[in-house]
Each structure stands twice: as C-alpha cells, then as structure tokens.
Length: 261
Ligand code: MN
Image 1 (cartoon, protein in one colour):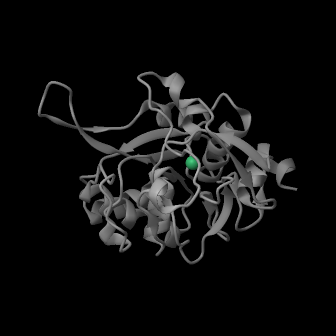
Image 2 (cartoon, rainbow, N blue to C red):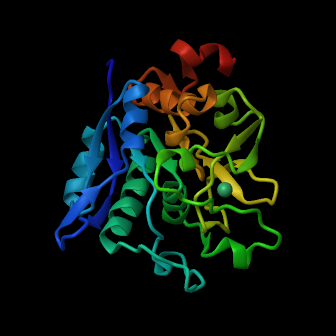
C-alpha cells in the first residue's frame, strides 16, 4: 500500500451568520496528513456505533484531532467554569473509537483533545483547568490569533523520554512546541507510557507500548510540519498505517529504519 486512508475526527460548528450546522476540521490536519503521504477522510460525529466500528475496520489509521473539552462524567472530573465546547456525540464516538483501535491493533495518533480522549477512553483522568489545578504551571494556553502565524509560535519546551517511540520517531530528546490547551492528563490510564513532559511536569505526550503505532501529543504538530521532527510524527503514523512500520513486531523499514536502530 502506498497511500493509506487516514480518518480524522471532527467538530460540529454553526456557520457564521447562520444557524446551519457543519462538520468542521481545521485544514492544518488535512494538509499535514497529505504532506506525510496519507489520504485524509473527515469523520463526522453523527455516525452511530455500528458505523464507527465499520469505519475503524476499513480505515488504515485514525487521527483523533483537537477540539472542545470532554464531558467530566467520563472521568469523574472536577467541574470548572472554564470548561467549554462539550459535544456529547463526539465524546461517545471518539472514546468508543479509541477503545476499538486499541483492541484492533490499528495505528492511531492523538493531538491535543485527542491525547485527552486516549487517556480518558483507557481509564485515565484530566485536570479540568490547569492554571487552577497544577501549582506553578507554565502558560499552556497561548494567545489564539486570527491567522496561522499565532499557531506556529513555540510556547514551551518538552523533554522527551529517551527510548520511547516519540524519541525514536523525532530523533530528539527535547523540542520546543506550541501549546493551546487548558486541560491535561491528571491520572495516566493503565497501559499508557509518558513519553514527554513540559518543565512544570504536565504530560505532553503518551504512547501505547506493544501497539503497531499508538502515540498522542498535547501540542499541535499539524501547524509545525515545516520542522522536520514534527513532520516525522505524521510520516511515522502514515508509514505505520501503510504497513511500512510496526513498533510491536519490530518490523521497521523505510525512512525510520536508521533512527530506530
Ligand atoms: Mn502545553
């Protein structure tokens, strides 16, 4: 297989000057998947359980994208006035799909909310507002400007655990990243491994050992694909979806072979 099919989860939104709703996804996710050699497909949240289970079977890889907050009911989270953007259908679909891709051994990548979805789906919990719940936390919610330039600004560093998938894929033990989140992982789900943290201890990346490719990051690499180490995350994901890379079986071929040995 050359170009794998990559499903990307999406938001609901109301169109400007209208009450009509749309399924929406920032194009940066789409362009990053295309740049890495994948064929992107937007997954609307309306699909029922029979539908998303069928989709999971047919897709080669699934990208859990950024978005609003996950309902606290799913992780017995602390209520907070800053919680926003809850979409019940999206919560149900994504948390179900995470468990499905984990059970099926299907490659997945989580970004921002996607990292939080992976953790909650597998039994972890979240801080519902980092500035009030993590002492001495750094600024994790950068200013969101009108144009793309605000998304490529690098707000804080992350230290990457040597030997992890993330370290192997990026070839780095430290990265400066962008940061657009007010929530984050509190209790790590059983089975997940922390692969990166910011200097204040906030978990910035997790991965699923013994999975063909299971990685999630709290920052937004889709805005940073001009940086080789960030594009490498998408390339490794697409390669795994195409069957060219498999961390579980140690079948490593193609462009990451040397970095991994
Ligand atoms: Mn951050």
